Image (cartoon, rainbow, N blue to C red; front, side, top):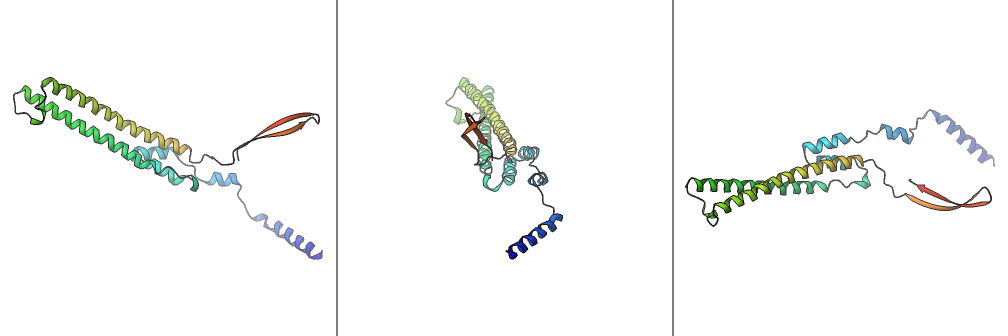
Length: 187
């Protein structure tokens, strides 16, 4: 019994002597952490497509990292649309030169000899339209990756825990009336 009293007395004195130790509360720790910058993610993604996604991936907590896999998709989208843009631009220039050579009675390319002048104009307009659509495609892929970087940056510190729950509990209200309590837990 004496041993227990001495132990409790020493333990309480030790606890009292540690009041000079400053312990940060979770709110202070959260405030000291530099917040994730949405603006920086957007600027990085605007300068180098995919850099905002990598910035977001690095800032995410360990279990939630998932933004890096989007970078190959961004470059595949930009690469494919750029390839078809360049291809259609070259074909429409080739068809324009072919039509101008036919009008000036100059030698023409044998690859287009199966088409008459109206056919050449129709193909020219077709490739011109496709080129314009792929210009829009490059712009849309670029804007989509920019929007994705901004949205992902907003959700870097968003808490999606597994401990979300909704419970129904019976309750006795006013000691005579039965009721039902609805409890929603976010953590």
